[in-house]
Each structure stands twice: as structure tokens, then as C-alpha cells.
Length: 468
Image (cartoon, rainbow, N blue to C red; front, top):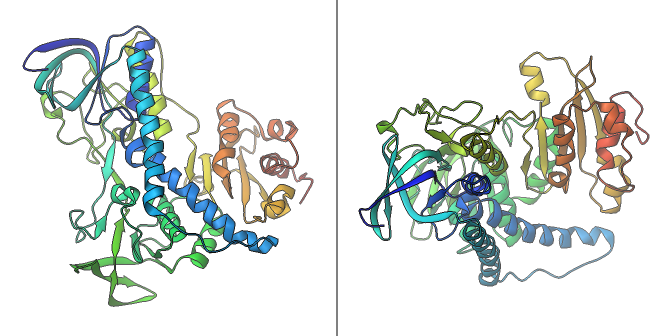
């Protein structure tokens, strides 16, 4: 690019699910678009080091666990032989296929893909540090889609070979004999699930009284029970300190009600205590973009910042840090920049923890209703009463529906059980459409399927569920 100043109608910083969705939408609406990202193709953390590689590995973990569980059904398999190199090659192939496909889509839409890192020089100019040297782009509008990065734990630096973030865990460079997972949130539990299935002795520590903090306890309970049976240990209300480097790993001290503050050694330690918005180092001080004390960029319903020419989307603007949220925010921002009237105001954003069993929810949770003192009616359907769940040997699930007592409108839905992530979209649609519990109950669901559990939970709101 050299020192030449180029001009574009729209520049998007970050090629993740929000950034490339915004770029493609803007191009479809006739805008001249440049998409800036350090990677060879669009995809961002989600495709390269997050959603996609983790789900590829979780699929393998699911196959291994299903083979083990099959013995209860009268079918026995031998111990699995794990070829880590071949598994890594397959996982990387999935990533490369998807990111390469996005690169092709960008070309087909005439989106200019600029490989490099962008920094604001002022509210209309970006400096790009790339392989071809520094350059500048003057823009009419810009969208910040820089995502998030792992949060470090004090005393456990991420620059030690023994300390992993989710990035290193997903690289699958090795299967450690003993793995400590610090953090009982969705990233920590998904990685614990993967490495336990691959043969690691996994210990999970969580600082709060329960796994998946913030998620309804009745949804977490089946998962917690299964994890405690499969993992080496799960320590709640426990903290980690005094890490010391070993030749082949690290030693730490665990402080908690069921550990005695003695040093324990692990081959690798995965730090999964959360993520923080990537809003530092973008040159935002040269603009009027406002950044809150939590590091999130302040935006309105159209995703416009306090600098009118600049928009922001995805992890860098708010929780929940989910790819599908960023995707929809990106499309909204692109529409607004193209002159359409659009706002980001969803009634429900589904969330899924891809463990075994999976946990999924959308809309109002029971915990939120209690905190807000909000009255709700709740219908519940245990999967132990589901014919389909019983035929798969997995009845450790639950579906529940929260409704408004007066209007009977569905306010929230929660599920736990194998495949819950594939079922939650129907619930999100119901909430977005303003459906009542009766609407779901009267919708004929195919039998025998797990989707019937949502129908019967809705029937239970009225005390009329057929199978309980």
C-alpha cells in the first residue's frame, strides 16, 4: 500500500463474524468496502481460534463419550486410539475450508481485503500496518469489529509455556497427562470436556459457588453431575495462587473448602477466566469515540459511537460476547450506513454451552426474574419423560419455559440435554414473534423428538402436559 492515501466509503476493522457480515451486507447494498484484518482470510477469533475449532474438537469428544455410554445399551467398543496429529490436521482443515470460503465470498462481492492492523489517526483516517508497509485510508464511515481477548489471571502469566489460553488449548499441540482448568465458565468447561475425552486427567477450579455462573442452577445441575463423574476433580469456591515454573509444567497452590492449600503440579494450566474487549491500541484517543470503564465502546441502538462517522459492533461493545450477536450487529450497522432505518434491539439472544450435556437459554432467565422481583409462570418438562431421550439413553435433561402471568407471552426458555443448542432457536423465534405459551403448545411437534419437550413444557404452564 506504501504511503499512498486511499479513499473508501466504508472501512471495517476486524474480519470476524461481525466484521465480515457487515462487509458483505454493505457490499450487497452497493457500498465500496475495505475489510482490514491481520489474518490471511476473514474469520476472526471465532473461526481461527474459537467457535469452529472448539466445536470440531467437541464433536470428537462427543463420539468418544457416546462410544463409552453405548456399553449400557449392550454395545461395547475398545479403548479409542487417539491420533492427535491427524485430529489436529482434520480440525485445521475445517478452519481452512471455512476461512478460505469467506475469502472467496469477499472477492465475489468486490470487498477489498487488506491484511494488516489498523489504527485511527483521526476521525476520518486510518493508518494500516501491513506486510506491504504502512499505508493510510481515508473513510466516510468506519466500523470497529476488533472483538475480544483472553483475560489473564494475576500470578499466572500467559507467556509461560505451561500456561495456556483458549488459543493454545485449541491448537492441540499435545494432550497433557494432567490439565488444570482455571474457570468454570463455558470456555473452561468446553475445553475440559475435550481434553477429558482425549485422555487428560482434568481438574477444574471455579472461584464462585457453582459452575457456569449466572446460568440457572437447575440447568447447570445435570452438567455438573456428569462432569464430577468424569473429571478428576471439580473444586468450587477455589482460587489459584503461587504459580511456579517446572521443567515440564507448573506448580500452583489451590485455596478452597475441599483443598488443603498444598502445592499441586500440572503439565499444563488453561486459564479461562473470561475475555475482555479489544479496544486498547486502536488510536481511539484521536477520535471522539467514548470507551466505558469496562473497556467496552459506547454505542447506540444503531451501533453508532459518539463519533458519528464511526460505528462499533460485537465483543468490543457489550456482553454477551457471542458470534451470532456480532453478526446481526454488523448487518444493522451496514444498513444504517447505507441509509436504511435499522436498530439492534433483539428480544432474545440465544446462548449455548456445547458441553455434554449442552446447556442453552434465551430471553429472561429464572435467576434474572428473581433478581428483578419479576413474577413469572414456569412450565417444566424433564427429559426423563421424553420417549426420544429414553431411546438415546440420555434422559438427564430439562426444558423450561418462562411466561408472563397476565399475557402468557413467552419471556424466556432454558434447556439442558444433548442437542439443546440445536433446539433453542425455536424458542428464540417464539420470543421474537411475541408468541404465547399456548402458541407453542398448540404447534404440532414431530414424535418422537426432543423438540416435543418445548411443547410439553409450554403445556405444563397450564398444568396440561401429556407425559407428566
